[in-house]
Amino acid sequence: MSSRYSKPLPPLPLPELPSEIWLKIAGELTPEEKKHLFCLNRTLYDLYMNEKYRDLSLVSTDGVEFVEAMETLK
Image 1 (spheres, helix red, strand yellow):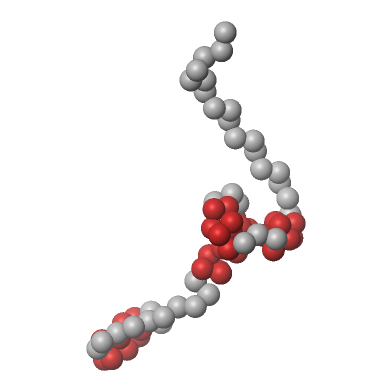
Image 2 (image 1 turned 45 degrees about the vertical axis):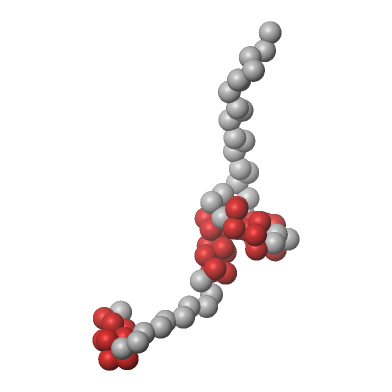
């Protein structure tokens, strides 16, 4: 007799594929799909983060304070 509340199966391990293969796979994915899969491995993580932060906007109401803050980043 099976239990109504059986334990879920453990996740299957991801295959060790070269980055080139993961990049091919990622090329077939939509941005939304990539968003959900970036935690699978370093290649997908790097790809997603590069796409997500490709454009960066810096906004400041005080130009002097902004320039000083940018100087500290050097």
